[in-house]
Image 1 (cartoon, rainbow, N blue to C red):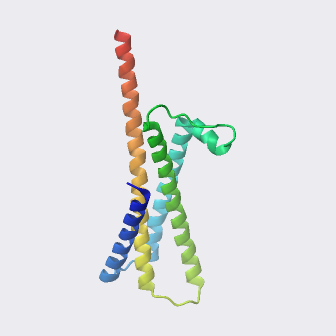
Image 2: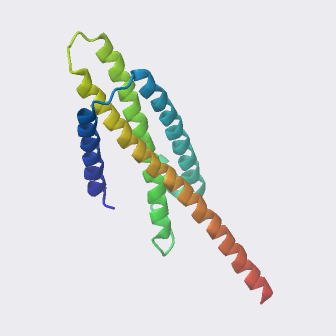
Image 3: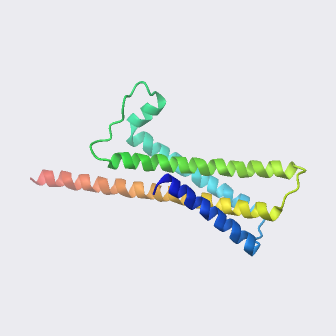
Length: 172
């Protein structure tokens, strides 16, 4: 799916959840959301780490290009686009998880700022916005987790295919 389509899908989901939360007057405490956000933060950090290791292990040329762009002219991903698509998916998972971490940090920072602010605001609107944001970043993180699982399954399938090809060559 194109990036802009996904962006508008997630934005639409945000507003849908926001209006549903307003309509049903969802009530929750900050402590409930804080516990969930801490868990989501831990999952995001794990995905970020796992995918970073995958990228460094599978695509060292791409990593060298990031570290020192002048040393490597291009990263060779073979004749097919499958390697490029895989790298794109891995980097996309890292970026989604990074975005989730940033949003969680901003929620925590907003809590500190708004708690000490003298400004008056409608708490129900804020609660609806926060729960909408939490739903959207949860789905973003699910997408990243899915790609971690997908990448691992594809890696195992390729290992088995290569093993079977070797065994077939040995039989000939």
